[in-house]
Amino acid sequence: MRALADIQRTFTHALLQPVLRVPDAVGERAGTSRERRFRVYRNNVKASLVAALTARFPVVRRLVGDEFFEAMALVFIGQHPPLSPVLAEYGAGFARFLEGFEPAADLPYLPDVARLEWARHAAYHAADAAPIGIDRLAALAPEDLHDARLVLHPAAALVDSPWPIVSIWTTNSVDEEVRPIGPDHGAETALVTRPRHDVLIHRLPAGAGVAIASLQAGRPLGEAIAGAPADFDLPHMLAVLFGAGAITGLLKGAPE
Amino acid sequence: MINRTTNAALAAAVAAAALMSAGANAQTANADKERCYGIAMAGKNDCAATGNNSCAGQSKADYDAKAWKYVAKGSCATMEVTLKDGMKRKGTLSPM
Image 1 (cartoon, chains in turn green, purple):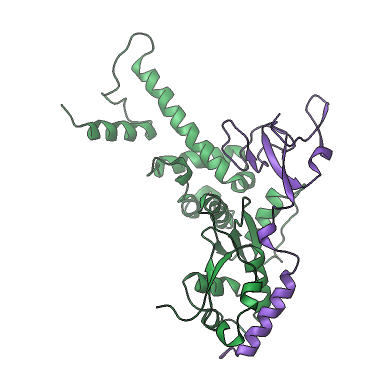
Image 2: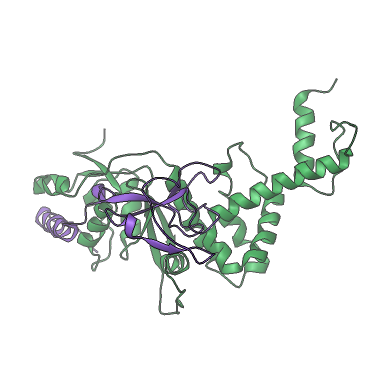
């Protein structure tokens, strides 16, 4: 008798590879043939994975069109079958896949838009935490600010891009009518947060992405902004961070 | 490059940021909102009451009676949508 794991491996492998024959483990029954029954199973798996990607990447889908998206999703599914039984975790590698997907090469911003959409999805499922107000930081003595460490919300994520991804995302999801994003829109860095139930996207001022990544890595405030350019707008960055509900705690002093 | 950010400069930046965020406290972002059912376009819902679409942005029909959207408190019953058959309907605070 073959091990169950063997049977399962053959079965799952054949599910996503239409050229492979029906696994032996699928037995004969009265009524519908085993080939036909397996095709139904195969089709349901694919349809559910396409549906998951469609729900997760609505702006990518809008940018390329429904038909193109579905074809692209099927190529992705064939190359990247789910590694986890949790459907909510499916699609993590989609942005990277898009980078190398030749037919979509005309839309160089597509992978970063996908990254932003994945960050929204991840933020949605991230742990809850209560944001603190900026009054907490303002209450610190001036000499404590340099070494203060800001604790970022588990849902907070940065998406940095040479393309205007926040503008592209916004006009394709929120605006009644899509407005053209011209070449005058430069690079944009997005801060994704979920202070309560809603996932929010904020455009960060230039230079803030590096500083926030540094804060996220646990560095104190003074150190995180030390490498920022001279025209860096610190008040703006702090207002966005606290206003977006991205900060959930404040630690005084150097890490142990 | 900021070579050495002085404590005074940091304090000034924090104070300026506090002024900028006054009145826009994220903690209370949804506190003045209510769940309004039956008004969300397909894929634009904030969440669902029951059924298959587990959450945000996944409702499949326009104005799904079981999908809700956050709206300003007190405004739900004034939200009117026109259904496919031309009927008009107001939002409700519980699933229809």
